[in-house]
Image (cartoon, rainbow, N blue to C red; front, side):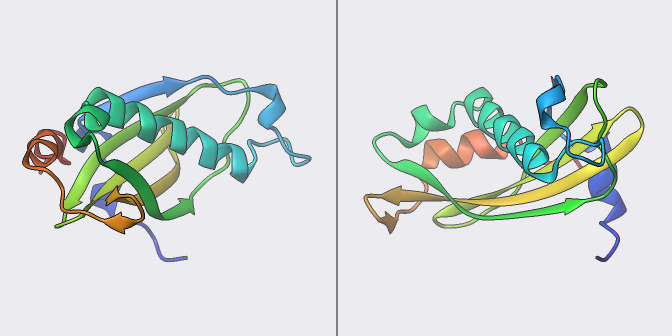
Amino acid sequence: MAKPDSALLDAARYPFDLEITTRFADLDPNDHINNVAIAAVLEDARVRFNEALGFRTVIRPLRAMVASVSIDYLAQGHYPQPLRCHVGAVAVGRTSWTVQQLLVQGDAAVATARTVIVCVDGDRPHPLPDAARAAIDQWMLRA
């Protein structure tokens, strides 16, 4: 695995963050937080980010679907220390937008994730409404 872009490891660039409590049930036999549990934490943070920017409201009656998720696991996460997930948008296309995430525990980067979300009408991609673009633009990663 290539080293992640150092700019993506700067928590100050992300406009949204939240603390997530770790659970004993998320541990694997190696006594660290399982990769599947990390993916679920990233998913929860991404959904909370979407809620914070009012995404569901600004695309109605359309829907959003995840088209792609890429996770890079950088370090082990441990119980019972909480995780902090930093989230921001990094790109807006005609029918989709991309979310970048940084998951940290203490001072250590545990994972990064990039997710492409597509606006759909039924089963087909649909152009993002102007209101959705405006909402996303306010939550872009800071320079």
